[in-house]
Amino acid sequence: MADAKLSNGGLHSHNRAPSKEIRRRSLLLIRATSATRLLLLLLALHMSCTIFRFAIPLYLSPDRRFLPCTMAGNPALHSQGEAAPSKSKRGMASLVHKKEREETEEGGEKDDGGEFWRQPDGLGFRPCLNFSEEYRRSSRRMMEVGGGEEATMRRRFLMVVVSGGLNQQRNQIVDAVVIARILEAALVIPILQVNAIWGDESEFADIFDEVRFKKELKDDVRVVSSLPPNFLTARPSADSIRQFDIDEQWILSHFLGRMKRNRVLLLRGLDSRLSKDLGPDLQKLRCKVAFSALQFRPAIQAVGNALAARMAEKGPYLALHLRLEKDVWVRTGCLPGLGAEADRVIHQERTRKPRLLTSRIDMLPHQRYLAGLCPLRATEIVRLLKALGASASTRIYLAGGQPFGGEEAVRPLLSEFPKLYNKTSLAMAGEIEQFEHQPSVMAALDYIVCLKSQVFMANHGGNMQRAMQGHRAYLGHRKHITPQKKGLVQLFMGNYTSTTDEQEVHDVIRKMHEDSVGAPSNRTDRKGRDVIAYPVPECMCR
Image 1 (tube, rainbow, N blue to C red):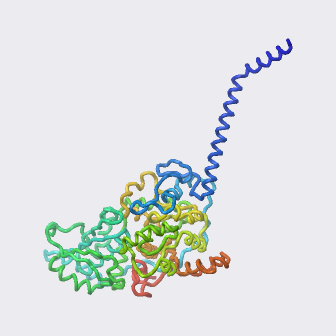
Image 2: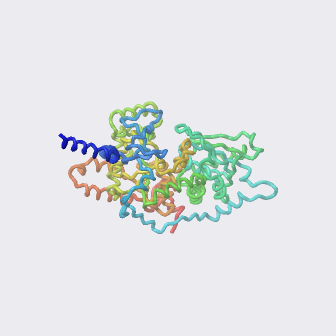
Image 3: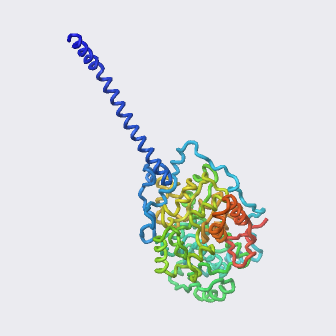
């Protein structure tokens, strides 16, 4: 018993002596267990993100906080606040990388270049705006002041109201300069009509560099900020141009007499009214306005340049104008292919606003699709890009608005090309918030980043596509992919998809696009081509 007591007493005495050490070890064990649990939780989140193909394991929100997966809660944007057709209500901001996160990635794969980045042969063409001697003499005559009386041009004023989105406005401003030149009138800085869809109340100087605009055109058309004081009470002769394909003689016969009488002419409805086949000097003037005079104001240009520089930090990038917005599906008469509910929403909107359907109203959606008149869907964009040589490491800048259907609409693209960015994901805190209520300025940022990309592709035609095509050609025929949609649709719906090796499909697609990557194309080869999209031969020579 004594021995036992000694043993027990010795045991208890031993346990009491190191009690602090036991507590320390217990605390370390508890901490290790908590850390292990946290690690397992993060691993589970990562696996769930991977399984569901979300954009990135951790999402850096616009206010620079990390949130699990893409659960940032940004709603997908739909016109008139309508719910998304899919269950997902997250916006595009949750699908693209934040710039800061990529910079923390170790050993990130770089795009290895190759065939996809190969530029077309420009055939030695370069910008050259060599106006004729007659044009230059006329310019001197219009600009000179003599005899104590202002020259003709200073006594006539053209005012114009331009409408639509950014690139529609650009086109109309170009044509307004040309009309002012034909009428030998001074051009008052164009009035931008409030956009009915976006509610953008921006004025000319909010978007464009007014000082540069005047300076670049000083030898062509006198540009003034407003009417002189003695004209402010004058009632201008107002008109809307309803006829298409009007030329110099039509303009002179319809407006010159009225301008001489009233001295101030106010025009509306310039969109796509002026002939695409004007004389060589007026075509050159169009190029001068579009590619040199009409630049964005410095603050916008600086932000756009910064976004483009961040895209280019790790090599070349593709700019993709997605064109999957709701209004695109409504206007084209096509269906988004996201299920019956999405199709119903588009059909109802088109029925409610039949004027939005732009052309060929007698064609059914499926007929339009087979004719290549619809935007490519995300799965089709993926197949096209992969066939042309894009890889999973290709960095892609997404231009344009929110796709109809949100995350669901672009998930196939994100799955194959995870390095997707847009202006929101590239911008630093406070950089673009100043422009949030100016959709035209946000579109201008897209324009700048797209123009500076190594490769550009518009998923569907339109004003942005034509502007990019011509501007990139003017800067040296930078690669511009034009999807051959009719051929692609027939290929994807044919036997190739089930009986032919995928590599053979890629070979067919590459062959199909050999002449659709931005090589020089003569405008005069086909009547009605716009010199803003095809600057050869009037605006480029070799």
